[in-house]
Image 1 (tube, one colour):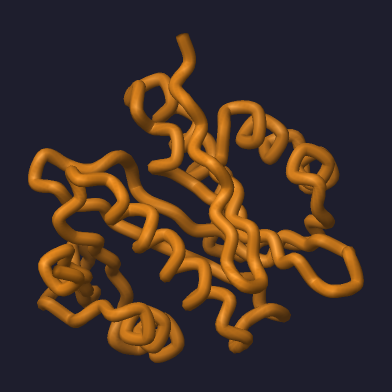
Image 2: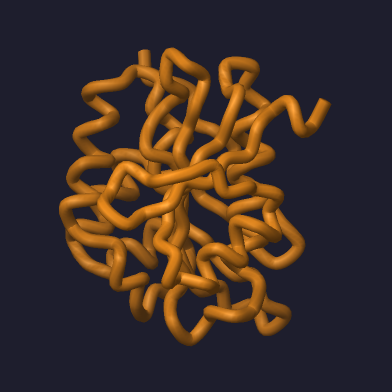
Length: 180
């Protein structure tokens, strides 16, 4: 029996679609195939999204029975002119850890940056994470030189909590306790 797929997330301007093995395989076939499966135009994806990430996500469905919804999400803008377009990706690095943490990440294509899409999508991902009672904290990592990324995290309610896992990185956290 396959795990239940999470429903799409909707914000004011975006639809977030959770990756499935079918979507990930379509992505590996190419952007036109991915666009067909997502029902949206895909001209380009963020440069940070590498094939290794897609393959890792695909393998994660085999490694974790509860991976659905805890991996990659595609950000689709729903404009007024009815031309749906994928403008970014984001999601989690896997299901909640034993300590109750999930790590979130995001990236938006260059021509859609500075429009609030990353903040809108990340806020939706944080809300979704806290719908799961296992999640005590949502984490994110960035670098001090990436002011736009820091801005997204701070607008979403994250606070800097120290050094990141990678050399020179910084870690941000949003705690469930802040909601209570």
